[in-house]
Figure 1 (cartoon, rainbow, N blue to C red):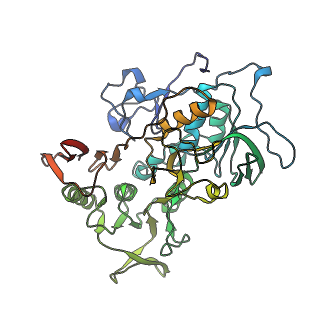
Figure 2 (figure 1 turned 180 degrees about the horizontal axis):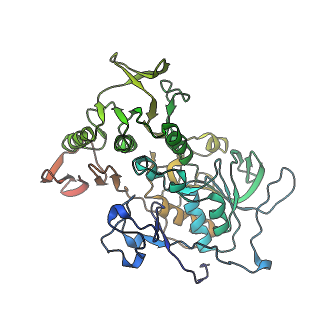
Figure 3 (figure 1 turned 90 degrees about the vertical axis):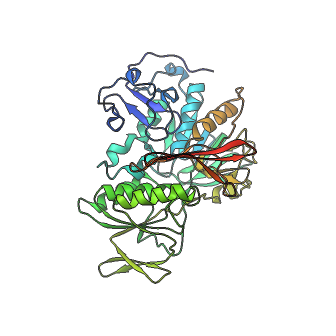
Length: 448
């Protein structure tokens, strides 16, 4: 069933890929669009500042909730109860980008189906990729928050159980146990994301992990207005972006990483050297081929001890060493798991036919799916499947990987293979283009 058309004055447009919202009243000054620029007046070569897709991948976001049904047709909200029988809804676990993406798609396809979203946090809507580039833009949590969880739930006619933790699944009775009681479900969709990797050398009391708006906002408040000494461990995408962002915000930043250069697992040496040079030119101190052995409280800050014997002194330490899926809930339900929750590559159905999963928590053919780009098509496939609507299924392709550093933005497309040679296609001080080929076919392209 298609959602009914309704008239509305829309000034907000949402990226269907990453969830970034274009607000006509604010424009996109970094891309040359002043406040007040209407969406239809944006040049065709403009692209989403977070994920790089074009205008065609944006859709209107109504500011007021439409009337989806007359009072006697209103969706009956699922009620939490420890004893009584209640109506079974489609239940989504997770209030991040994946959870809200599938909720939006379900509601677009069916205005009346009951949907309950369970979130351990407030489920506020924000674009997570913005967290690693927000300090230098002098933003706070209010500036990053696109919509509160309650407002999103009202707009989509979703029952939101915020600050509620899912603690168990009874797959036979089709019930989800939460800290607020038990919920029956007709279909269960796991969109719980992934959490930062835990490491014994990085105690939670001393080391920050920036994976949520709440964590970023807390760090932002602690940093205050003064320049701080910040040590960032890990030079993947997030580590590189955080390092440049903090340096541009006026902090003294040291980036510690195991590789010979930043993003060593993705980039050829030629591109890695450029990134290393640009980070250094932004004021970031780089310590390559280094491993942290301990992080301890000291008299005048925090001591980061390296295995080489060198000791760094910091006011704040941030770990950006990767993500891992919390598999406890899936394993309690007897679901198949490996690097994440194992799902069918086309239907995104787990080993239990009533349970689906998407986003950071899943694995496809044994590989985790950590990027934001695939979430929208995954949500579309799941929404059609649980509603019993025809659909061609999800077809995975490697998402474009983008580094959002202003000093050296780069984009990697395709499937890079460490065993293949990188060929230089274009090389000037302003631009570097490299490719990998297999049997004459281009398999990966890097543009810096």
